Length: 352
Image 1 (tube, rainbow, N blue to C red):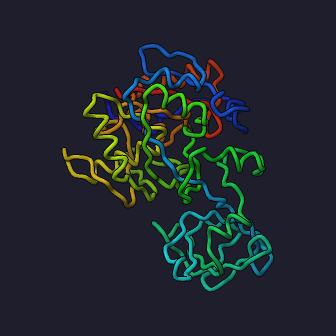
Image 2 (cartoon, rainbow, N blue to C red):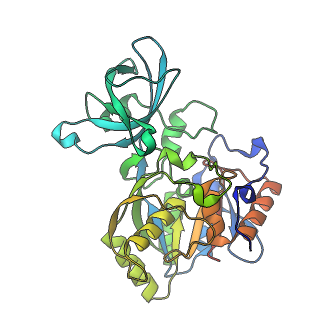
Image 3 (tube, rainbow, N blue to C red):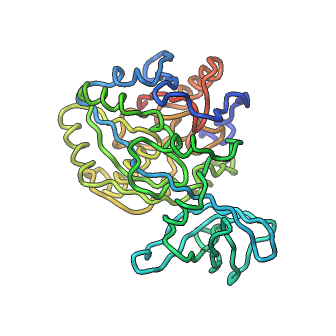
């Protein structure tokens, strides 16, 4: 197969298939079973029957923070901030963040921005990769300020303002570690009943953490895929998860990633553990860009939502299940009127 380019990951999506609200019930969303030779239309609560006793499903336990803040500059101009990363130091009274700022004119270092008509933030300067972010100093603990004054950071293709429904539903039922500015969306379909059914079937669970950044929505602009650079995200694969994976492998079970973020955390840890070596507990930052040709070392099955055209996530699932297979599944999903993107439906894929 010739090298794939950006155009190979394009498709036409009817706008009405972009889900603006979640399904009435988490596990009532549709599930396209693409793990076999032919696609099968199912409901998400069917998932436990599609996995085998002894399989291990790995979840991302990150928690979405209310990372969007609305404010004004001293001139009265509007500012919208999306906090990308909370910096260490809150325990020592240092309250600083990196954030995306959107304004008619970017604020300068040394200026202040008034957020939510409640507190001021000082702009310390530019920060992050390629100085794409702003370094802000806040007057108190960022998590507390965001919880009180922030908004749910809904993706740009969801057109309504955040509401109480979003605060509950743009969060997994097992979210534990705050730090994400986008949800691990495949896991939004899991509810207590599905988790109980998985356990009853003998499917074990493990947890990793990857704090999803706003860069998950960053478009790929280069026709040559190898020219694209991923955003950096913090992740951790702990000793408990590694032990569960080793035990599952030893017993002949399969590793099932609940979402692309769990998969990226696991495969990043495998790379960090060294070539051909045993998976080791790992924490750090990952810029791993998974595209066709990538050699997977950990994950055997993937549960994932449907992704944007020309996106790195579509490239990831194509690397995992095969480009032709994935694009055929997407055509089926559009014809069958599946709902797309963060609040949309899901599919189950097998590693090619």
